[in-house]
Length: 198
Ligand code: ZN
Image 1 (tube, rainbow, N blue to C red):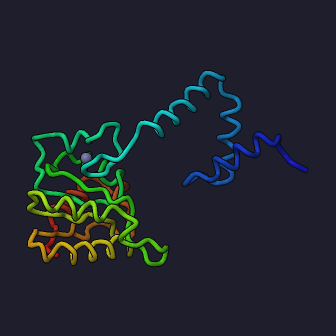
Image 2: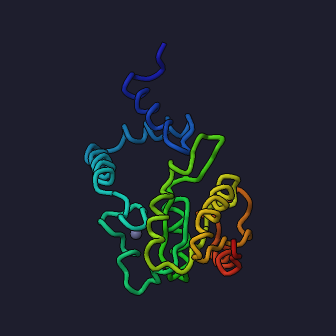
Image 3: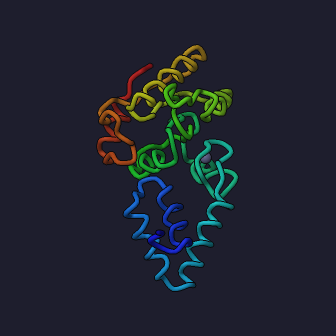
């Protein structure tokens, strides 16, 4: 016997498919949504669709943005000769929150993981190499200190080294396996300042 109506079950299933949402949370959210006024549900649905349709990759750094070129890349005051390589837009946001980094970014949208079958061609790596044809003085690799993050850092380091461009890795003050977005600003800045040559 089905415990709930088919529609509620379907809603619970969809919500449970989202990251970080377990079966219990999915149920709670589903009932919350059902009890919300119709206009509010409409607004939420429209906001999700609008975001999906209007958010795209910045044509330079590949972070998620509403414009062709994101506000960081289109800012003349930023140092476009220093590129910090991060795994995702959330990591970029973590460094931006420190307010101390003046360079620009490159968002890989993932990390190399032989175990998960994610190779160099599956992340925005050739896009990074293409950017190095411009005036770049330093590439700071700020991928996570997980196995995948370290593998990616090493791979990128080997790729860039022969070009003569300075390539550095943030210090490992960042806890192993730690997602950059959960690390406080002081630790992030220390990791940045203590970066070493690759
Ligand atoms: Zn950008």
